[in-house]
Length: 76
Image 1 (cartoon, rainbow, N blue to C red):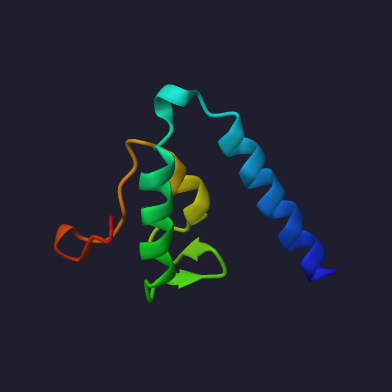
Image 2: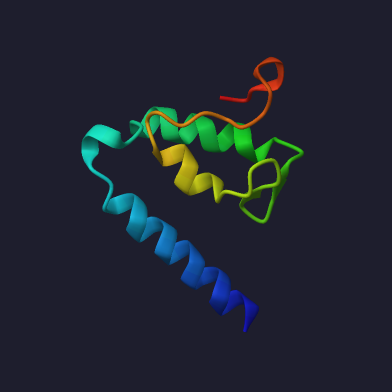
């Protein structure tokens, strides 16, 4: 049951990212770099940032979003 729920959440996130206006989206290179940095972060748990509670794949898709860590610790 849990696997199915996680799959539904992932599909919802992908759908929302796909519907973002292009002017608001981070480019693919920036998006991939952000996700790589998030994967290495100790504050990531099951795709959720424990600092702000966001799904990192969704937050990283926005051009103007920032990592929620304090400026000295920022990952992206």
